[in-house]
Length: 441
Image (cartoon, rainbow, N blue to C red; front, side):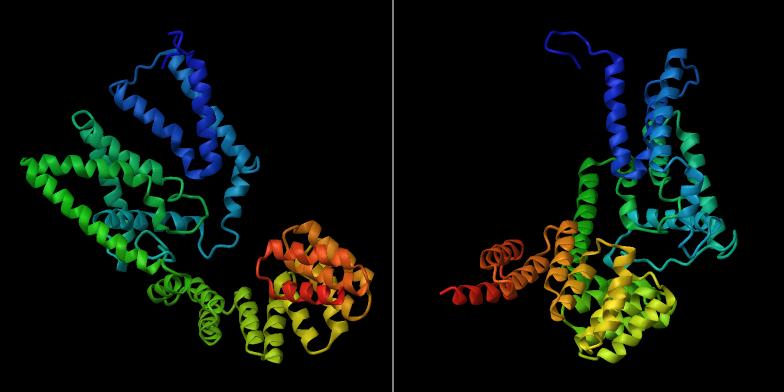
């Protein structure tokens, strides 16, 4: 690239720009951490003709580039990569060894999706069985052999088939971040997007190598594109709404807690409370040690008007996790419905002692204090809620009600209008504003 003056930009400036872009990529998506390896491999393959003779300057630039990337990664991992790496396994149901062994099978599964991906094989929430040992299951060993064979093929053909060799290595390099030792979820199909870029190039090249007639090659590729486009259309139907989406995942992973629980949440949000309760019950049967599902069940029972059973589920959640803030807040609200104001306030206060700026707890405490006639104390809690969440319409609406009681109509009107600005059509604020206007006539 040249400036308008015709002078070539200094290599150092190019390097700085590339480093900045690469660091931004890592900050955006962690798997960009493999970028230095991919760049060095590209350099070696296509600019150095696979020769090991590098100039001193090139080696120093390469080491400097790796040092910068390494520093960014160490910073991103909190300065202690080992501790950060192991922390990812603290809440997983698999060990690092089990994850690494399982990934060999998953990578082969990814490759199979490149070749054949009807909607029935796609699932956001796979319930993928773990590899416990090298031969448990036996497919673990065979997948390791298959991956080693692909790597060997890449090395063997590198001299004569440079692009094909690079495409194979690109797949494994770009897959490395999410398919090795980092303690993240085992499998997600979207992890193949970047690896499949060069795999697609390889597929097109092989197509025209194997089929000499270009017309036939174009016809074959067109057929493949049409087939995969049709599958994409079919798969998009599963994504049309949360209930359909999670119904698909729950059907494909019937023993996966998260799929059943999240389908319950989708049904709850859609207003199908009975359906949500059935899904929550399935989730409890699958994983009785998960706290969130008990809280979700309590919420569903509240919607059905079954306050006492809901309280039992909220209490169950807190017995398993005393720091479960949502369950404690929900329990306090349920106690309020039963008229047990003192008990409810104790739970609100526990939340606020731990999290003084907790929005819902401040709003609920404010509402409770308002019922007791402690208007100024209630206003104080609403103000705290607004400081934490300036876009909370409920806090503004509730403050407006209290300003009416304090005979401050202008303040009340401003707060009702603010609530409506934040949530157009907010029925409670509309009614409160209408009553205020009638009072002022």
